[in-house]
Every structure is written in structure tokens, then in C-alpha cells.
Image (cartoon, rainbow, N blue to C red; front, side, top):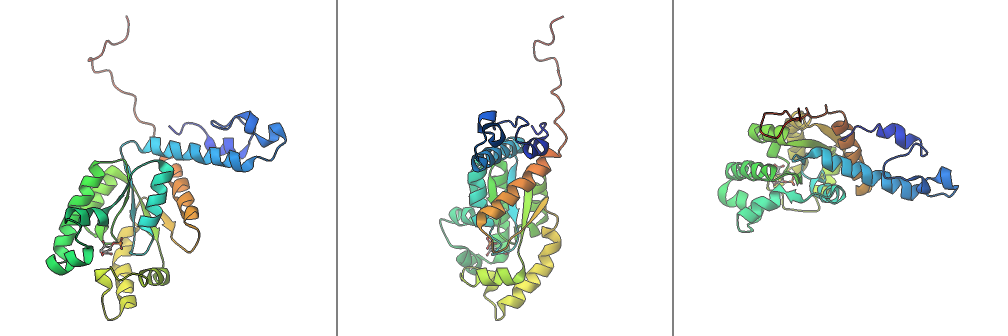
Length: 244
Ligand code: S3P
């Protein structure tokens, strides 16, 4: 994977891009067909990302309201991978009990322990696109598992955007405080140094979701493309071996 100098090829539509035959090349035909060519190149890039991931997942981390579930669902569609939402999986593991009720009945530590187990299971079932709850990566064991089994993307949202988004919903137990804005500021200060350790960072802002998804795919592509090629399989004497 990633052996084709793709950026160079795309910069020149006549350069014989894989998946972009010359009959679709606007220079060759004189017809303006760039949207189709761009789609083809995008689909090629997505397929390359999925292939290079192998069994690894893409894990979205970041604060509540950063858009991890919304972007994750769309990213999964584009990469043709299953989408898994860790919060939903935790609720399912509790016979559908909503997260605020899990917090209220059993406490945050119990929720966090369950979160560690659920994310471990999701990572073992990769590849997938996994949206994590905002506090998940504060557990070191979860960070280590994500590092070993996934490529992580921090969806980085500023405090004002987070506040605007979380105000629409009252299902964040940590924000049921007298001053939710101060709580978000405190959580951001505690968590940003940890989120920053993600492999990739994409700004979450008020632009069409597909733009953020495009940026995630571009960043994944660049990252995976820079990985060293896997070592060739060693002949350890189990197969027929070379013909003498
Ligand atoms: C939490 C974020 C929530 C959910 C729980 C705790 C957090 O998920 O896991 O309410 O600690 O930031 P989202 O980030 O998907 O809202």
C-alpha cells in the first residue's frame, strides 16, 4: 500500500492516476469532468486508507460536543468500516440503561471501569471507526490500547463551540453543575494535554460535516502513507520453499 506517489499523480491529471482512466481525464477529452475525477480520486484514497489500516481501528477522541459520533458515523461510511459508539455500547451492556442513570445509580468510577472494558472489546473487534466518550482516554490503559490497536484522531473543539452544542442536550451527567461553562473550562484544561497525544488532530468547527470528514481522511492518508512498508514474510520452513 501507499507505494504510488499519489499527490504527484493527482497534481497532473494526465499522469495515469490509478482509478482515473484517461477517458475520464478532462485534458484528454476536452470535457469538464473534474467532479467525477475528484470523486474517483477520493474513493481511491478512502480505499487505500481502509486497506492500510489492516485490523487497526480509527478512534475519535475529544470533548463532549466535539462531534465524535456525528463525524465518526460519516467517516465509517466513507471508509466502508463499521461504526461503533462506545457510549451506546456501554448502555447496551447495561440493558439499555442511559448513561445519566448509570452515573446516578452506580457512580462515575463504575462507569469508567465499564468504559475501559467496552473500548478494549471494540478495539479487539477492529477494524472499525470508534467514537469514544470524552473522558475515556483519561484512563492510561485505554490510551495504551488505542495506541497499540488504532490510529487516533482528536476532534479539537473550542469551549464556545462545545457549550453551544452541549446546551441542546441534557444528557451529560458531568455538566449538571451550577456553572457548566466553568466545568467545561476545567475539563478542557485537564484533558487537552491528554487529547494532544492523539496521532492526528482535526479542528471541529461550524463547517459542513463532510468537510471535517474529508480532513480526517486526508490526515489518515498522509499518516498511513508515511508508515514504513511491512517487512516481507520470512520463510520459516513451513511452506514448500524455493524450488532448487
Ligand atoms: C463524558 C462524555 C460522554 C459520556 C459521559 C462522560 C465525559 O460522552 O461518556 O457522559 O467524561 O466527557 P460524549 O463525549 O460522547 O458526550
